Length: 110
Image (cartoon, rainbow, N blue to C red; front, side, top):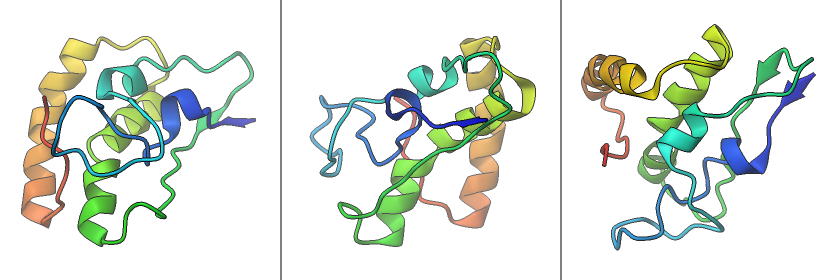
C-alpha cells in the first residue's frame, strides 16, 4: 500500500498562510516540519507527494511549491519515519546547494 494523505503530502497546499509572498493555494498550511513528521500506518510500503497545478501556472511556481518539502518526503520514504527534524534541516542545507546548481527555484527555508 502507498499512502498519500492530504494532511502531509499535498504540495500544492501553501506552506504557510502568514507569508504575503506565498502564491495562491487551494489549502494550507502544510509546513516542511509537518511533511517530515508524517508517520505512515503499519503496512504502508511507500509514500507519494501530490502537486496539482491549477493554481501553479509556471514551472517556477511548481518548483517553489514542491521543494524542499519533496526532499522531506523523499527522506521519509527512503529511511522510514522517526528521523530528527533538526538533523534533517542540517542535511537539507547541503541539498539546497545542489538545487541551486540545478537552477531549481525552491521555497526558501523559514
